[in-house]
Amino acid sequence: MARRRRGTRGAAAVELALVIPILFLIVGGVVDLGLAIALRAQMEEAAQEGAAIAARNPTQPSLARQRAKEVVTLTNLANSDIKITCPAGPGPRVTISHTSPTILLGAFFSQPFAIETKMTSGRLSSGTCTELTS
Image (cartoon, rainbow, N blue to C red; front, side, top):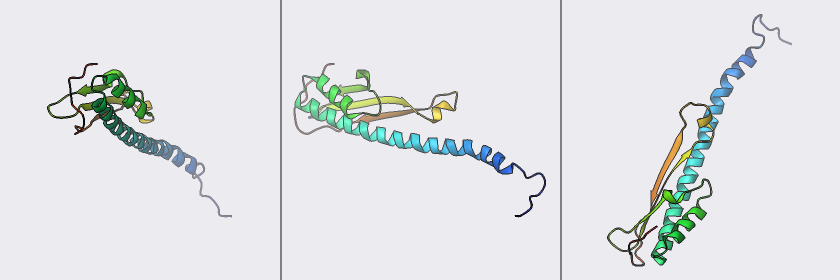
């Protein structure tokens, strides 16, 4: 067994104590980034689904909002997050804007971190577009 030099006792524990918080922040950032990417994909799909429903049922925007809410499972969307408009041309446009707090990184900082996502569906060629009311 090798002899240890004097004064090096516990050095590994101190090094571990210094590295663990940094490693935890890196892992937390990766997890939050992955959740943000997944949320963005869900919101994009929700905007497309909502636009498809709105094109088929132009007089019932509540059906489009409900379908958009069903698609997004990572967060709760409010009715105010989903905007259905009727621009010039065929088909309605669905815009979803939502700000979601980060899970891990927000716990370490006084300023809350938030991920803001805004998705707009493209105009659909099918269906006529009449002015949609909430």
